[in-house]
Amino acid sequence: MTDQDLEMIAARAAEAAPLWAAVPPRRRAHALVAAADALLAAESELVATAEEETGLSDARLSGELKRTAVQLKLFAEVVVDGSYLDVRIDDADPNFVLGVRPDVRRYRVPVGPVLNFAASNFPFAFSVAGGDTAAALAAGCPVIVKAHSGHPRLSLMTADVVSRALESAGAPRGTLQVISGQQAGVDMLKDPRIKAGSFTGSIRIGRMLADIAAARPTPIPFYGELGSVNPVFVTPAALEENAEGILDGFVSSVAGSAGQLCTKPGFLFAPAGASFAEGIATRAERVPEHRLLNPGITSGYQSRRDAVLNTPGVTVLAEGSLRVDGEGQGWATPTIVSVPVEVLKEQRDALLDESFGPLSIIVEYDDPAKLASIADELFEGNLTGTVHAARGENSAAIRALVAWLTHSTGRVLFGGWPTGVAVTPAMQHGGPWPSTTNDSSTSVGTAAIARFTRPVAFQNAPGELLPEPLRDDNPWSVPQHRTPAGESQSWGSLE
Image 1: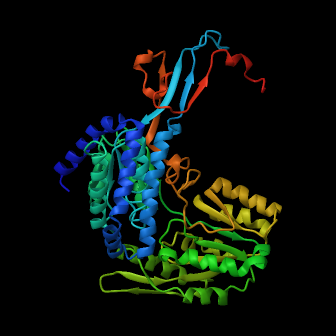
Image 2: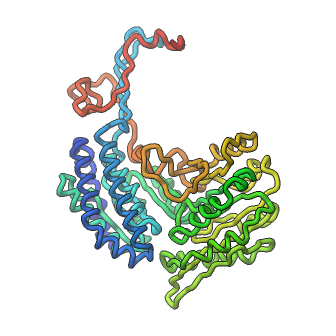
Image 3: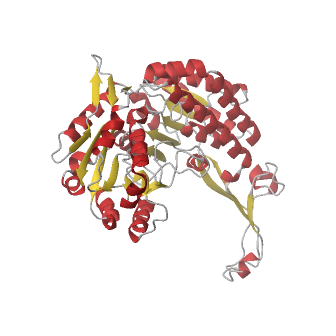
């Protein structure tokens, strides 16, 4: 894209920002619903294009498109409800315990134009109209999406469908726009009119972009979802109780979408001596080869797979396959290996990285009581961590492991598998570095909207100049948390 193109797009987003922010909640919500309905109406054409560009299955893509529409509709409900505005009103209080208190009213406002870097592995749910875009639009922010090179035609088609729907429902021109090209993304991130950035991708690129956002003359928040190996821990009692179910779920979770998911279980800790070899091999052999997203993903997976298979001390349970054509496009089946925990420690430089593809490592441990300390020694932050325990199992080792997971991951699962992230209000999809650049945020669930707002307080403002959410007559009918005069006199009584 030319500099003139980028200038026009940035200027248009800046012009749209105050207009979109001023749209009343129900009108903004109706625009989001219109966008969702338009995506569903265009499903056949969009899914066919996505399947051609990404190699993902029709069923997977249709489900993902539905998820994308549901995200938009969920955020429409969030906008109308208004709780995300976090309205707090402290009434003026001449008898406040610390001296006269003024009338103070606080709520959250849109930050302004947002730049969203789309992901390759979710061409709908984390791309042009995905969760980051939906959350920013719901917050009242125009969005510029840097399209992913892995699905360029789909990106333009999606943007056309969604922007037309938004504008037909009253959104200003420029509420959603798309740019393409790595340099264009970097240049736009540096533009002073961009007030926040979001990203889903690799640690290397995410860190580079986060550093650019932080190094601007006026730094901006940057919400990156980066790398995660999502460890799973299986106790001896759980294995005795449900070995077949655990093996079924593990192989399915590793193989789903050719392992190209940020929540794929990269490591499974199992008791030493567990008879996994035959069960893993049999299940992995049943998985048909699946196309990888693009030649870049193929090259990275090939290097990673070779590194793991060539590491001393690794035992191959299912070698899998990787077929690469003359254009560098790959098709893979699951590769699963095992390694004693001491070898993993010794070979951590070769084995601990994320394998973006259908590869996972089973780690054999001897003492369940040491799982928490082993995990603390080996792993940094992750999006998820999973515990498979037997019914009623409540040992000190389990509690220590859960405590470690609570501090080291964003989502702690019991008895399930981390692939498949529910689009629901309570979901947390984020975690400590390096899984994300900001461990207090989420990119899935209704709390995701907070990333694209900032708080502002009004002190002793005349009623006629207050924003609607802060007025006493509350025309938007949003929740208001009020601290009345005189209340401070009873603070600390705990009644």
